Length: 99
Image (cartoon, rainbow, N blue to C red):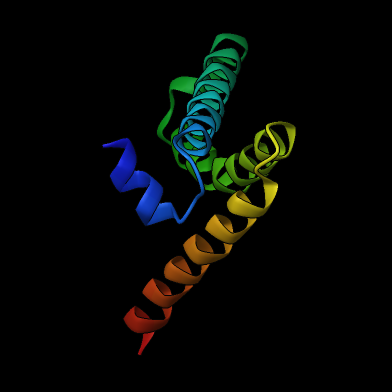
């Protein structure tokens, strides 16, 4: 499994794969903890509007947190390229649907 990820992500070692997985895990955990914090402090947090707003607002915040953890773990360039590919795919989804 790690070897496949190493080849897919074009990184040099299995250690790089482990670091990348740790960054994804930390980012996901941080975002989950943020949601719990928000839900605990706002009465309206159980509403549909909160959910919709949260998911639209969390996308850019998730990207920033991912890049921050990537920087801390010395993999900023990998995650910067990852973000650019992801945003390009999202943009292409919207461009195709609108034509």
